[in-house]
Length: 136
Image (tube, rainbow, N blue to C red; front, top):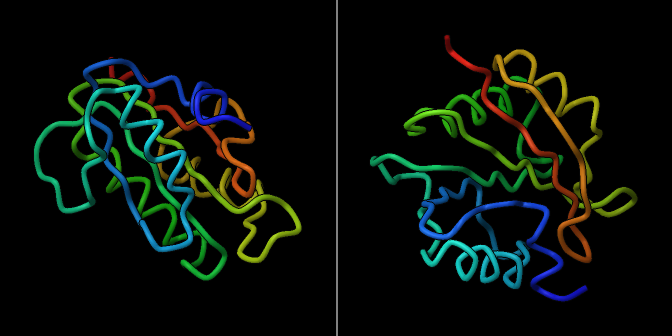
């Protein structure tokens, strides 16, 4: 899978700022580089305090329970200026650290968000697209 095809489903746009949560040495660096190329900006870390357009959460089974993921989702949307997209990226099924889609969906619902799609984003990683609800 090429970098371009790996990142295209993430649908970030040129000029956007993307905040990254729970980076570790196991993340897919090609995907990170492709997001940076697509947006024209390096990913910012979880300590970034300015406005962002989207977020990536690298989530593995040992990162916590449903409540922990819910908290992370809420944190990830705190810097959104308006509607935004969060990608929860987890190890693919049958790989160490895999998280069930049910677990992610439960956290998403409790956080007041909604999951819209699931795609393979890298050779060992799958992503679930999560969107903020309109606050009208």
